[in-house]
Length: 194
View (cartoon, rainbow, N blue to C red):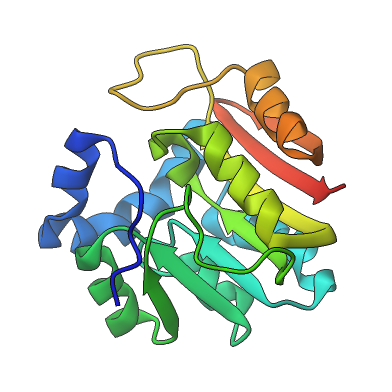
C-alpha cells in the first residue's frame, strides 16, 4: 500500500529510486558515521536501543532505508520509507513490517507509539519542522525520539544541514525536551515528548 502523502527533494527522490543505490547503502551506512563523527554503527545501534528500548514499544523507524534501525528495535517496530527500491532491499535483508510513506505525514494515530527513530533521513526531509511535529503527534507523552543527522554549516548538496541550535529549536518547538550530542559533524538526538 502506498501511503506517501508528502513531497520529497526531487534529486533525492530520483537517487533513492535507483535499485543499485539501495543495494549499496549498507556499505556506506556502515562507514559514514565513523568517518563523520568517530561513531561505529554498533555504537549507534547500542545508543538507539539504550534510549528507545526502555519504552517497550511499539516503535517506528522513519526513513528506514534498508531497515537497520527497524531490525535492531525488533518485532515491535515498523519501518517507513518513501523509496520502494529501499523497502524491497529492507524486506529481503531484514524481513519485517514496512510501509511506503513519508516522515512528514505519518500514517499513525495520535499517541500510538512509545518510540520513534529517525536516522540520517533528518537531512533529507523537505520540511524538518513538519517531521518533528509528526513524530511528536504519534508519540505518547513521555515517548522518546532517537535521531542522527549531519550538522552544518557546510556544502549541503540540497540537504537540510542545521547548526546545533537550529536542530534543537525545531524539536523543542514541536514539543520535545532535547539533548543533542555533537560528535564531529554528526548530531545524536535524544528527545522526550512533553
